[in-house]
Length: 314
Image 1 (cartoon, one colour):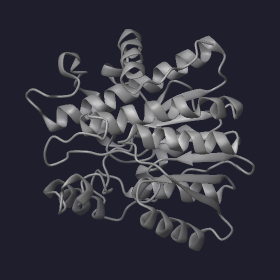
Image 2 (image 1 turned 90 degrees about the horizontal axis):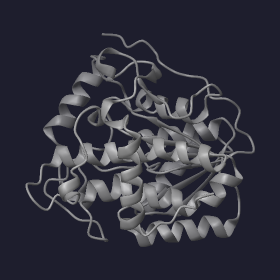
Image 3 (image 1 turned 30 degrees about the vertical axis):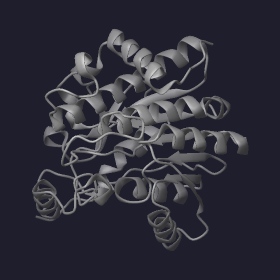
């Protein structure tokens, strides 16, 4: 079935500095390319320098003259997060756009980060939480828009408050949903606190629907030596234009949330097709697990404690 082209206009971003996590492949690579094409200077924090260099080469082939630079970042290590924060604060340049895009999904067994957290919770949520805390002075200086990438998995599920680290009865998909629910609650609480304390930051959420990205592909660093059957099915459906998006269209909700002049603070953007799995990006009804301000405040407090990250009260 022929696929109807889907795209959005990106406003001119000349003079803006954008940071995109997970920009070395898939959706993140597409986001970095589109931001660079709009004139932004794009900082690409990556775990794998070789993949990062290949990504920069690919973007510069498509966008001659693109302003791009690599920084090291492993979101599963709070030491690495702190080092990136130190580096960027040392450069002293305001950040105008931050897209918290990187993530991991469905490791073949329960794994821990360098700091002892369940790897999905530690990487998808806690690593980004600490990163925003470290970069807060630069985000405030740039009156930044912060867009945090959640998932359709956050539509249902809950925070496992009795066992955040999933030491008992590990369930990989419930743990993944928890990581994205916590991350979404954080993104919404960031907006509330910015408004309350005058930080000048706006924060919203996006999700990519379902598309053939690297999340479920072979990931040797997670102990997954081959593609999952699920990603093979996703690729087949996406290639036929059935319900799902592509890596390119899956990047559009985050780009809309991060750059559209009328993108709303505290809103959720995702594909608008059946089941919100694919289709043009649009604002969507907030997922039920993300609607509680009390849960968001609790996530914030616990995340500060776990990551030893202190946000200012003003």
